[in-house]
Amino acid sequence: MAAVFDKPSLLRRMAPWVEGFDGPLAFAVFLLACAGLLIMYSSGYDHGTRFVDHGRNMLIAGAIMFVVAQIPPQRLMTFAVPVYVVGVALLVAVAVFGLTKKGAKRWINLGVVIQPSEIMKIAMPLMLAWWFQKREGQLRPLDFLAAIFFLALPVGLIMKQPDLGTSLLVLAAGLAVIFFAGLSWRLIVPPVLLGLVGVALVVWYEPQLCADGMRWPVLHDYQQQRICTLLDPSRDPLGKGFHIIQGMIAIGSGGFFGKGFMAGTQTHLEFIPERTTDFIFAAYSEEFGLLGNLMLIGAFVFLILRGLAIALEAPTLFARLLAGAVSMIFFTYAFVNMGMVSGILPVVGVPLPFISYGGTAMVTLGLALGILMSIAKSKRLIQS
Image 1 (cartoon, rainbow, N blue to C red):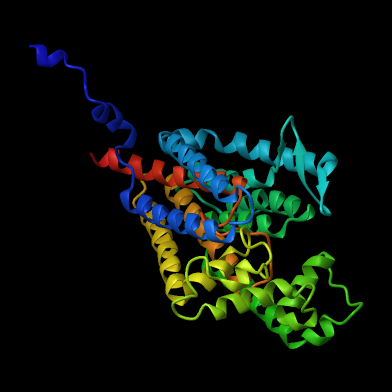
Image 2 (cartoon, rainbow, N blue to C red):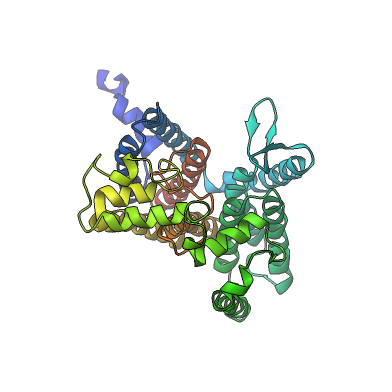
């Protein structure tokens, strides 16, 4: 009889908290976190406490992931509309009386200085997944138009700040939900073809379009300069083109096996700008080479595919759409960052997940991972 009243072990008491956690997803994140700490130690050796701070940010993101993973997807759905409304209201407040730094009005002081656009990276897919869940089985074209409006409003406000990188991430997250909800290919193909034609025309007429004094509609001057610099970095090799040129030199000089840990000359001689943030992939490539890049890309591919697998097995439409959108957020982060550093995309402020330094971005990643873990956990608990 005494055994009946024995106090359960700590392991048994913790079991309900970790039960259902997705092992493959956690393993992919662990590999990326190790790679991030390794290259942060090397590239941030003379940046004070960057390595320690990066590790702290990872621990905070891990704690956030653990907490969010305990919230069932049904409960997450109740937060969708309030979080979206608050996020849009804060973006409007930023436009009216936000703080301006380096020519951009992206922050607001609410006792602490925050960047509301970061909220929309998670609020946008939450809102659209909620919208389509409420209309499951009776979707009409008007519902997709309303979803596009919900997406266009915050994206337009973020672009106005201007913040092209964050607006691109929010746009990608929202479009992923709309696509996974069943948007017809007949509506997808025409704008894609139009975009490809536009890119071809820009490349073809680049000398005329990028001539001094030429101004493009819609885009800010600095955004126009980034596109022109992408097409021809040698136009301003010591100014606007410096980032791209040095990034490509670092990637190419790494060869197949890389120069070795702490042995990257472009990195340690400080030729790579922003080598601990947006351009850390160049530092990684120089030290670990093509082989290291393939391993890093493989880890990202595994993470994204695992997220999409969780989406396919999710028990509700809301969970499927949300998991699919979150997975595509990771894809957009990685693809845009690696593309801009490699010189195939314009330079925008998009960090490399788990690798680049940055507390706000790491918190967002922790939230995204927590959502994926929550959906995976709910699926396993239902099956059991």
